[in-house]
Amino acid sequence: MFGPLFLTVATAAFAQPYSLHRAGDVVQLEDARTQTTVSILPSVGNIAIEMKVKGHNILYWPYGSVEEFKARPGMSGIPFLGPWADRLDEPAFFANGRRFAFDMQLGNVRGEMPIHGFVTTTDRWNVVEAQADTEGAWVTSRLEFYRQPIWMKQWPFAHTIEITHRLHDGVLDVETTIVNLSAEPMPIAIGFHPYFQLTDSPRDAWKLSVGARTHWLLTSNTVPTGETEPIERFFPTPQAASLGEYSLDDVFTDLVRDEQGRATIAVTGKSQRLDIGLGPNYRAVTLWSPKERPFICVEPTAGIINALNLAARGLYKDLQSVAPGGTWRERFWIKASGFSGASHALISGVRDRLPTPQPLCDQLGSLPIVAPVQDAHVLRIGAQVNTGRPRVDFRVSVRTSCEVPGRAIGGLNSDLSRPVQLRRVRVPRPFSLPIVENAGSLLPLLRRFAPVPRGQAAIPLP
Image (cartoon, rainbow, N blue to C red):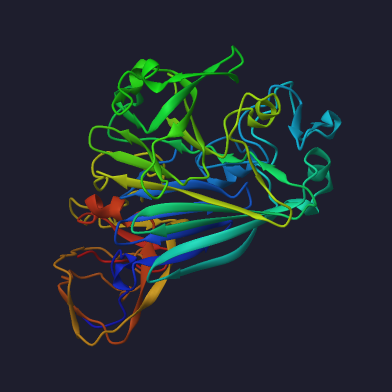
Protein backbone atom coordinates (compact mmCIF):
# COMPACT_ATOMS: atom_id res chain seq x y z
CA MET A 1 0.00 0.00 0.00
CA PHE A 2 1.35 3.41 -0.98
CA GLY A 3 0.24 6.84 0.13
CA PRO A 4 0.85 9.52 2.73
CA LEU A 5 1.17 8.13 6.22
CA PHE A 6 1.69 10.26 9.32
CA LEU A 7 3.71 8.21 11.70
CA THR A 8 4.16 7.12 15.23
CA VAL A 9 3.95 8.56 18.69
CA ALA A 10 7.31 10.31 18.77
CA THR A 11 9.65 12.03 21.12
CA ALA A 12 12.01 14.93 20.64
CA ALA A 13 14.97 12.56 20.80
CA PHE A 14 14.95 12.49 16.99
CA ALA A 15 16.56 15.93 17.10
CA GLN A 16 18.42 17.67 19.91
CA PRO A 17 17.23 16.52 23.35
CA TYR A 18 16.02 19.94 24.51
CA SER A 19 13.00 21.80 23.22
CA LEU A 20 10.69 24.62 24.23
CA HIS A 21 7.17 25.27 23.14
CA ARG A 22 4.02 27.06 24.25
CA ALA A 23 0.47 25.91 24.74
CA GLY A 24 -1.73 28.89 25.50
CA ASP A 25 -0.31 30.62 28.57
CA VAL A 26 1.97 27.71 29.44
CA VAL A 27 5.66 27.63 28.56
CA GLN A 28 7.00 24.09 28.50
CA LEU A 29 10.62 22.99 28.72
CA GLU A 30 11.45 19.46 27.62
CA ASP A 31 14.45 17.19 28.00
CA ALA A 32 13.74 14.14 25.85
CA ARG A 33 16.83 12.26 26.98
CA THR A 34 15.74 12.16 30.65
CA GLN A 35 12.01 12.28 29.82
CA THR A 36 11.60 15.42 31.92
CA THR A 37 9.11 18.18 31.18
CA VAL A 38 8.60 21.41 33.14
CA SER A 39 5.54 23.62 32.66
CA ILE A 40 5.59 27.27 33.75
CA LEU A 41 2.65 29.68 33.84
CA PRO A 42 4.02 33.27 33.65
CA SER A 43 0.50 34.76 33.63
CA VAL A 44 -0.19 33.42 37.12
CA GLY A 45 2.74 34.34 39.35
CA ASN A 46 5.30 32.75 36.99
CA ILE A 47 4.56 29.53 38.85
CA ALA A 48 6.02 26.23 37.70
CA ILE A 49 2.94 24.02 37.82
CA GLU A 50 4.42 20.70 36.71
CA MET A 51 7.74 18.93 36.61
CA LYS A 52 7.14 15.53 35.11
CA VAL A 53 9.84 12.90 35.23
CA LYS A 54 9.04 9.85 33.09
CA GLY A 55 5.37 10.73 33.44
CA HIS A 56 5.41 11.36 37.19
CA ASN A 57 4.61 14.90 38.31
CA ILE A 58 6.88 15.62 41.27
CA LEU A 59 5.06 18.89 42.01
CA TYR A 60 1.83 18.89 43.96
CA TRP A 61 -0.70 20.73 41.79
CA PRO A 62 -4.28 19.64 42.58
CA TYR A 63 -6.00 21.10 39.53
CA GLY A 64 -7.66 19.44 36.59
CA SER A 65 -6.68 22.12 34.08
CA VAL A 66 -4.82 25.38 33.63
CA GLU A 67 -8.17 27.13 33.25
CA GLU A 68 -9.31 25.85 36.64
CA PHE A 69 -6.08 27.05 38.23
CA LYS A 70 -6.33 30.49 36.61
CA ALA A 71 -9.89 30.88 37.86
CA ARG A 72 -8.96 30.11 41.48
CA PRO A 73 -5.18 30.02 41.90
CA GLY A 74 -3.85 28.57 45.12
CA MET A 75 -0.52 27.68 46.65
CA SER A 76 0.91 24.74 44.70
CA GLY A 77 3.66 23.99 42.21
CA ILE A 78 6.64 26.33 42.75
CA PRO A 79 5.36 29.79 43.71
CA PHE A 80 7.66 32.78 44.22
CA LEU A 81 7.26 34.67 47.50
CA GLY A 82 8.00 38.39 47.54
CA PRO A 83 8.84 40.96 48.60
CA TRP A 84 9.00 38.82 51.73
CA ALA A 85 8.61 35.09 52.31
CA ASP A 86 6.48 33.43 54.97
CA ARG A 87 5.11 35.38 57.93
CA LEU A 88 5.63 38.75 59.54
CA ASP A 89 4.62 39.12 63.18
CA GLU A 90 2.75 42.40 62.56
CA PRO A 91 1.31 44.31 59.57
CA ALA A 92 4.56 46.23 59.19
CA PHE A 93 8.23 45.63 58.52
CA PHE A 94 11.53 47.27 59.42
CA ALA A 95 14.21 48.35 56.96
CA ASN A 96 17.18 50.70 57.31
CA GLY A 97 16.21 51.51 60.88
CA ARG A 98 12.65 52.59 60.00
CA ARG A 99 9.27 50.95 60.46
CA PHE A 100 7.04 50.74 57.39
CA ALA A 101 3.37 50.09 58.20
CA PHE A 102 1.23 48.49 55.51
CA ASP A 103 -1.83 50.29 54.19
CA MET A 104 -4.38 47.61 54.89
CA GLN A 105 -7.05 49.49 52.92
CA LEU A 106 -5.30 48.68 49.66
CA GLY A 107 -6.32 45.03 50.02
CA ASN A 108 -3.13 43.40 48.78
CA VAL A 109 -1.81 42.77 52.31
CA ARG A 110 -4.15 41.01 54.71
CA GLY A 111 -4.26 39.91 58.32
CA GLU A 112 -2.43 40.73 61.51
CA MET A 113 0.39 38.46 60.43
CA PRO A 114 0.84 39.04 56.69
CA ILE A 115 2.20 36.04 54.83
CA HIS A 116 4.01 35.37 51.51
CA GLY A 117 4.10 38.94 50.23
CA PHE A 118 1.63 40.02 47.55
CA VAL A 119 2.96 38.96 44.12
CA THR A 120 2.42 35.21 44.37
CA THR A 121 -0.25 35.03 41.63
CA THR A 122 0.31 38.31 39.81
CA ASP A 123 -0.21 38.51 36.05
CA ARG A 124 2.49 41.18 35.64
CA TRP A 125 5.32 38.85 34.69
CA ASN A 126 6.63 39.26 31.15
CA VAL A 127 8.60 36.61 29.27
CA VAL A 128 11.81 38.23 28.02
CA GLU A 129 13.61 35.14 26.70
CA ALA A 130 12.57 31.60 25.83
CA GLN A 131 15.01 29.31 24.03
CA ALA A 132 16.36 25.81 23.66
CA ASP A 133 19.71 24.66 22.34
CA THR A 134 22.02 21.67 22.69
CA GLU A 135 22.76 22.60 26.32
CA GLY A 136 19.26 23.03 27.69
CA ALA A 137 15.89 24.76 27.50
CA TRP A 138 15.06 27.86 29.47
CA VAL A 139 12.59 30.70 29.93
CA THR A 140 13.30 34.01 31.66
CA SER A 141 10.47 36.18 32.96
CA ARG A 142 10.71 39.68 34.38
CA LEU A 143 8.64 41.51 36.99
CA GLU A 144 9.04 45.29 37.03
CA PHE A 145 7.97 45.90 40.58
CA TYR A 146 8.64 49.63 40.46
CA ARG A 147 5.93 50.18 37.82
CA GLN A 148 3.11 49.25 40.22
CA PRO A 149 2.10 52.16 42.49
CA ILE A 150 0.01 49.96 44.78
CA TRP A 151 3.04 47.72 45.36
CA MET A 152 5.39 50.62 45.90
CA LYS A 153 3.00 52.01 48.53
CA GLN A 154 3.49 48.83 50.57
CA TRP A 155 7.17 48.20 49.79
CA PRO A 156 8.86 51.52 48.86
CA PHE A 157 11.93 50.05 47.17
CA ALA A 158 12.00 50.26 43.39
CA HIS A 159 13.39 47.06 41.91
CA THR A 160 13.07 44.45 39.18
CA ILE A 161 13.02 40.67 39.48
CA GLU A 162 14.03 38.18 36.83
CA ILE A 163 13.51 34.43 37.21
CA THR A 164 15.02 31.91 34.82
CA HIS A 165 13.73 28.35 34.80
CA ARG A 166 16.38 26.22 33.07
CA LEU A 167 16.17 22.50 32.31
CA HIS A 168 19.45 20.67 31.71
CA ASP A 169 20.25 16.98 32.08
CA GLY A 170 16.96 16.39 33.90
CA VAL A 171 17.70 19.06 36.52
CA LEU A 172 15.48 22.14 36.92
CA ASP A 173 17.55 25.18 37.88
CA VAL A 174 15.69 28.27 39.12
CA GLU A 175 17.79 31.44 39.18
CA THR A 176 16.50 34.72 40.64
CA THR A 177 18.06 38.12 39.94
CA ILE A 178 16.95 41.24 41.82
CA VAL A 179 18.18 44.70 40.82
CA ASN A 180 17.71 47.51 43.35
CA LEU A 181 16.71 50.69 41.49
CA SER A 182 16.05 52.73 44.62
CA ALA A 183 18.33 55.22 46.37
CA GLU A 184 18.53 53.17 49.59
CA PRO A 185 19.67 49.65 50.44
CA MET A 186 16.84 47.16 49.97
CA PRO A 187 16.46 44.20 52.33
CA ILE A 188 16.20 40.80 50.65
CA ALA A 189 13.64 38.50 52.25
CA ILE A 190 12.29 36.62 49.23
CA GLY A 191 11.89 32.87 48.83
CA PHE A 192 10.14 30.06 47.03
CA HIS A 193 7.52 27.62 48.28
CA PRO A 194 7.88 24.40 46.20
CA TYR A 195 5.32 21.65 46.82
CA PHE A 196 6.93 18.26 46.27
CA GLN A 197 5.46 14.79 46.06
CA LEU A 198 6.66 11.27 45.39
CA THR A 199 4.49 8.73 43.65
CA ASP A 200 5.97 5.41 44.72
CA SER A 201 4.94 5.61 48.38
CA PRO A 202 2.66 7.61 50.70
CA ARG A 203 3.82 10.73 52.50
CA ASP A 204 4.30 9.01 55.86
CA ALA A 205 6.77 6.55 54.30
CA TRP A 206 9.10 9.25 52.99
CA LYS A 207 12.53 9.92 54.47
CA LEU A 208 14.22 13.30 54.84
CA SER A 209 17.87 14.23 54.74
CA VAL A 210 18.19 17.76 56.10
CA GLY A 211 21.57 19.38 55.58
CA ALA A 212 21.35 21.91 58.40
CA ARG A 213 22.81 22.36 61.86
CA THR A 214 20.33 24.68 63.57
CA HIS A 215 16.61 24.50 64.29
CA TRP A 216 14.71 27.65 65.32
CA LEU A 217 12.19 27.52 68.15
CA LEU A 218 8.81 29.00 67.26
CA THR A 219 6.00 30.79 69.04
CA SER A 220 2.45 29.44 69.00
CA ASN A 221 1.96 31.62 65.92
CA THR A 222 4.84 29.81 64.19
CA VAL A 223 7.28 32.68 64.03
CA PRO A 224 10.80 32.29 65.45
CA THR A 225 11.35 33.38 69.02
CA GLY A 226 15.01 34.13 68.41
CA GLU A 227 16.09 30.99 70.27
CA THR A 228 17.69 28.06 68.50
CA GLU A 229 18.75 24.49 69.19
CA PRO A 230 20.96 21.91 67.48
CA ILE A 231 19.05 20.12 64.76
CA GLU A 232 19.61 16.78 66.50
CA ARG A 233 17.21 17.85 69.24
CA PHE A 234 14.47 18.05 66.65
CA PHE A 235 15.61 15.39 64.15
CA PRO A 236 17.71 12.85 66.11
CA THR A 237 18.93 11.51 62.76
CA PRO A 238 18.75 14.52 60.40
CA GLN A 239 20.14 12.52 57.49
CA ALA A 240 17.40 9.89 57.75
CA ALA A 241 14.34 11.39 59.41
CA SER A 242 11.01 9.59 58.98
CA LEU A 243 8.45 12.11 57.78
CA GLY A 244 5.61 10.04 59.16
CA GLU A 245 6.71 10.97 62.68
CA TYR A 246 6.37 14.72 62.09
CA SER A 247 3.91 17.43 61.16
CA LEU A 248 6.31 20.11 59.97
CA ASP A 249 6.29 23.90 59.91
CA ASP A 250 9.90 24.49 60.92
CA VAL A 251 12.87 26.70 60.12
CA PHE A 252 16.49 25.58 59.73
CA THR A 253 19.72 27.52 59.23
CA ASP A 254 23.49 26.99 59.33
CA LEU A 255 23.08 24.82 56.27
CA VAL A 256 25.71 22.16 55.60
CA ARG A 257 27.50 23.24 52.43
CA ASP A 258 30.08 21.85 50.05
CA GLU A 259 33.18 23.70 48.84
CA GLN A 260 31.04 25.74 46.44
CA GLY A 261 28.61 26.78 49.15
CA ARG A 262 25.83 24.46 48.01
CA ALA A 263 23.46 22.84 50.50
CA THR A 264 21.13 19.90 49.87
CA ILE A 265 17.82 18.70 51.27
CA ALA A 266 16.65 15.28 50.07
CA VAL A 267 13.29 13.51 50.09
CA THR A 268 13.29 9.77 49.47
CA GLY A 269 10.52 7.26 48.89
CA LYS A 270 10.61 3.57 48.05
CA SER A 271 12.97 4.14 45.12
CA GLN A 272 12.31 7.73 44.08
CA ARG A 273 14.45 10.58 45.37
CA LEU A 274 14.40 14.37 45.09
CA ASP A 275 17.50 16.42 45.85
CA ILE A 276 16.83 20.12 46.37
CA GLY A 277 20.03 22.16 46.16
CA LEU A 278 20.44 25.69 47.51
CA GLY A 279 23.07 28.26 46.58
CA PRO A 280 24.90 30.25 49.30
CA ASN A 281 22.54 33.24 49.31
CA TYR A 282 19.68 31.03 50.39
CA ARG A 283 20.54 31.22 54.07
CA ALA A 284 17.56 29.31 55.47
CA VAL A 285 15.10 26.58 54.59
CA THR A 286 11.57 26.12 55.88
CA LEU A 287 10.05 22.64 55.84
CA TRP A 288 6.26 22.56 55.77
CA SER A 289 4.36 19.30 55.62
CA PRO A 290 1.14 18.98 57.65
CA LYS A 291 0.61 15.37 58.59
CA GLU A 292 -2.66 15.00 56.70
CA ARG A 293 -1.37 16.46 53.41
CA PRO A 294 0.29 14.44 50.58
CA PHE A 295 3.26 16.76 50.00
CA ILE A 296 6.29 18.37 51.55
CA CYS A 297 7.38 21.95 50.93
CA VAL A 298 11.14 22.53 50.96
CA GLU A 299 11.34 26.32 50.88
CA PRO A 300 14.60 28.05 49.90
CA THR A 301 14.57 31.50 51.54
CA ALA A 302 17.00 34.39 51.74
CA GLY A 303 16.28 34.63 55.46
CA ILE A 304 14.23 33.01 58.19
CA ILE A 305 10.54 33.62 58.83
CA ASN A 306 10.03 37.21 60.06
CA ALA A 307 13.66 38.00 59.23
CA LEU A 308 12.95 41.70 58.59
CA ASN A 309 11.51 42.33 62.05
CA LEU A 310 13.73 39.98 64.02
CA ALA A 311 16.80 41.65 62.53
CA ALA A 312 15.56 45.05 63.72
CA ARG A 313 15.34 43.63 67.26
CA GLY A 314 18.79 42.14 67.13
CA LEU A 315 17.48 38.55 67.13
CA TYR A 316 18.60 37.64 63.61
CA LYS A 317 22.06 38.46 62.30
CA ASP A 318 21.95 37.16 58.74
CA LEU A 319 19.55 39.54 56.97
CA GLN A 320 20.78 40.37 53.46
CA SER A 321 20.39 43.63 51.57
CA VAL A 322 21.35 44.94 48.15
CA ALA A 323 22.94 48.36 47.72
CA PRO A 324 21.42 51.09 45.52
CA GLY A 325 22.00 50.05 41.93
CA GLY A 326 23.23 46.66 43.08
CA THR A 327 22.17 43.13 42.19
CA TRP A 328 21.27 40.10 44.29
CA ARG A 329 21.36 36.76 42.55
CA GLU A 330 20.87 33.16 43.62
CA ARG A 331 19.63 29.80 42.42
CA PHE A 332 18.18 26.57 43.67
CA TRP A 333 17.73 23.37 41.72
CA ILE A 334 15.75 20.16 41.73
CA LYS A 335 17.16 16.80 40.73
CA ALA A 336 15.00 13.68 40.51
CA SER A 337 16.31 10.12 40.50
CA GLY A 338 14.94 6.59 40.84
CA PHE A 339 11.89 7.26 38.67
CA SER A 340 10.73 4.68 36.16
CA GLY A 341 8.24 5.08 33.34
CA ALA A 342 4.62 5.14 34.43
CA SER A 343 3.13 1.77 33.60
CA HIS A 344 0.01 0.30 35.09
CA ALA A 345 -0.50 3.06 37.63
CA LEU A 346 -1.60 6.33 36.04
CA ILE A 347 -0.33 9.01 38.33
CA SER A 348 -1.05 12.63 39.26
CA GLY A 349 -2.28 14.65 36.34
CA VAL A 350 -1.81 11.92 33.74
CA ARG A 351 -4.97 9.83 34.03
CA ASP A 352 -7.35 12.38 32.55
CA ARG A 353 -4.99 13.19 29.68
CA LEU A 354 -4.57 9.72 28.25
CA PRO A 355 -6.64 8.82 25.20
CA THR A 356 -9.82 6.83 25.56
CA PRO A 357 -9.87 3.71 23.37
CA GLN A 358 -12.62 3.55 20.74
CA PRO A 359 -13.15 0.53 18.46
CA LEU A 360 -13.24 1.17 14.72
CA CYS A 361 -16.22 -1.09 14.21
CA ASP A 362 -17.83 -4.17 15.64
CA GLN A 363 -15.98 -6.48 13.26
CA LEU A 364 -12.54 -5.05 14.09
CA GLY A 365 -11.54 -7.80 16.46
CA SER A 366 -10.53 -7.96 20.09
CA LEU A 367 -8.15 -4.99 20.22
CA PRO A 368 -9.17 -1.42 19.39
CA ILE A 369 -6.41 0.40 17.56
CA VAL A 370 -7.55 4.01 17.47
CA ALA A 371 -7.92 6.51 20.28
CA PRO A 372 -8.48 10.26 20.03
CA VAL A 373 -5.94 12.69 21.42
CA GLN A 374 -7.17 16.17 22.29
CA ASP A 375 -5.45 19.15 20.68
CA ALA A 376 -3.65 19.95 23.91
CA HIS A 377 -1.95 16.57 23.84
CA VAL A 378 -0.19 17.25 20.56
CA LEU A 379 2.51 19.56 21.81
CA ARG A 380 3.84 20.53 18.41
CA ILE A 381 4.80 19.14 15.03
CA GLY A 382 8.43 18.09 14.99
CA ALA A 383 11.11 18.52 12.38
CA GLN A 384 10.69 16.71 9.08
CA VAL A 385 12.08 13.21 8.82
CA ASN A 386 14.19 12.25 5.84
CA THR A 387 12.53 9.35 4.08
CA GLY A 388 15.66 8.16 2.33
CA ARG A 389 14.81 4.67 3.55
CA PRO A 390 11.83 3.81 1.36
CA ARG A 391 10.16 1.35 3.65
CA VAL A 392 8.99 1.47 7.23
CA ASP A 393 8.19 -1.73 9.08
CA PHE A 394 5.27 -1.39 11.48
CA ARG A 395 4.74 -5.02 12.47
CA VAL A 396 1.08 -4.28 13.02
CA SER A 397 -1.83 -6.05 11.38
CA VAL A 398 -5.06 -4.18 10.81
CA ARG A 399 -8.03 -6.16 9.59
CA THR A 400 -11.57 -4.95 9.21
CA SER A 401 -14.59 -6.14 7.28
CA CYS A 402 -16.47 -2.85 7.40
CA GLU A 403 -15.76 0.63 6.15
CA VAL A 404 -13.64 2.71 8.51
CA PRO A 405 -14.69 6.37 8.85
CA GLY A 406 -12.23 8.82 7.34
CA ARG A 407 -12.16 10.82 10.57
CA ALA A 408 -10.70 7.78 12.33
CA ILE A 409 -7.89 7.15 9.87
CA GLY A 410 -7.40 10.27 7.85
CA GLY A 411 -3.82 9.74 6.76
CA LEU A 412 -4.57 6.49 4.88
CA ASN A 413 -6.87 5.84 1.97
CA SER A 414 -10.34 6.22 3.41
CA ASP A 415 -11.63 3.10 1.65
CA LEU A 416 -10.63 0.20 3.85
CA SER A 417 -13.68 -1.91 3.15
CA ARG A 418 -11.55 -4.97 2.43
CA PRO A 419 -9.08 -6.69 4.76
CA VAL A 420 -5.78 -4.84 4.88
CA GLN A 421 -2.51 -5.83 6.45
CA LEU A 422 -0.06 -3.03 7.21
CA ARG A 423 3.51 -4.20 7.48
CA ARG A 424 5.73 -2.40 5.04
CA VAL A 425 4.44 0.97 3.91
CA ARG A 426 6.28 3.22 1.48
CA VAL A 427 6.47 6.86 2.58
CA PRO A 428 6.83 8.80 -0.66
CA ARG A 429 8.07 12.12 0.73
CA PRO A 430 9.38 13.73 3.93
CA PHE A 431 6.87 14.09 6.75
CA SER A 432 6.73 15.63 10.21
CA LEU A 433 6.45 13.70 13.44
CA PRO A 434 3.83 14.89 15.90
CA ILE A 435 5.26 15.24 19.40
CA VAL A 436 2.67 13.93 21.86
CA GLU A 437 2.39 14.88 25.53
CA ASN A 438 3.44 12.18 27.98
CA ALA A 439 4.63 9.82 25.29
CA GLY A 440 6.41 7.86 28.00
CA SER A 441 3.13 7.35 29.81
CA LEU A 442 1.52 6.14 26.59
CA LEU A 443 4.06 3.37 26.05
CA PRO A 444 2.01 0.69 27.85
CA LEU A 445 -0.83 1.42 25.44
CA LEU A 446 1.13 1.39 22.22
CA ARG A 447 0.30 -2.15 21.23
CA ARG A 448 -3.39 -1.41 21.43
CA PHE A 449 -4.12 2.19 20.55
CA ALA A 450 -3.16 4.56 17.77
CA PRO A 451 -3.64 8.19 18.86
CA VAL A 452 -5.24 10.50 16.33
CA PRO A 453 -3.89 14.06 16.71
CA ARG A 454 -6.31 16.90 16.07
CA GLY A 455 -8.80 14.49 14.51
CA GLN A 456 -6.83 14.49 11.26
CA ALA A 457 -4.72 11.41 10.91
CA ALA A 458 -4.18 8.05 12.51
CA ILE A 459 -0.76 7.19 13.87
CA PRO A 460 -0.03 3.48 13.30
CA LEU A 461 2.04 1.91 15.99
CA PRO A 462 5.38 0.10 15.85
